[in-house]
Every structure is written in structure tokens, then in C-alpha cells.
Length: 116
Image (cartoon, rainbow, N blue to C red; front, side, top):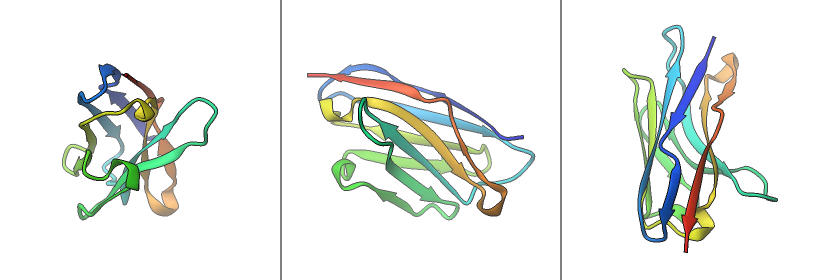
């Protein structure tokens, strides 16, 4: 069984910061890729940032230079530090972990609201 617990969402003013955290409970497995997606009302879910088991990150263009993804393989956690937040960053953010052939799992989502 894989269980994801997210935390850190909330309401922040434009230009502010938030840090999202996701803890993954597994039977000792380490995910190949961990990441964060987001979905705004009326829009498709989109990848925000991902990070490989080896620590190589990738970001969507609109968040480069503002967001930083990190993971701790020993603790099975993945964090997303979000700085210089903009109103267009408002969305529900979902943690995602990919175990390759063992499947992909999603968190329940956490709301991020940026007021302008």
C-alpha cells in the first residue's frame, strides 16, 4: 500500500512564499520520480516540477527561478518551495510518485490561493 500525505497549502499574497510537503508511506520502496502537479478551475492538470531518484529536477517554464523541488529518499518526502507567487499559481496542488512498473500514485491535493 502507498499513502501520500500533503501539507503546506494556504492563502498568500502575491509575491509571498509557501512550502508544500508530501510524505510517502511505502513498504520500503523509493519512487523513481516524485513530483508536483496542479490543477486550476476549468483547466487540465499540469506538471509543475519533478525530481528523479538521483535528484535531477525539472520545472515547467512558468515556475523556473521561483520554485524549487527537493526530495529526501531516506524519509520518502518531496517538497516544493514556492517563492514570488503569482495569482496564476492559484490551483490545487497534487503530489505524485512514480514507482515505474509498480504504479503511479497521487495525493489528495492541497489548495494554494494567491491573492493579488
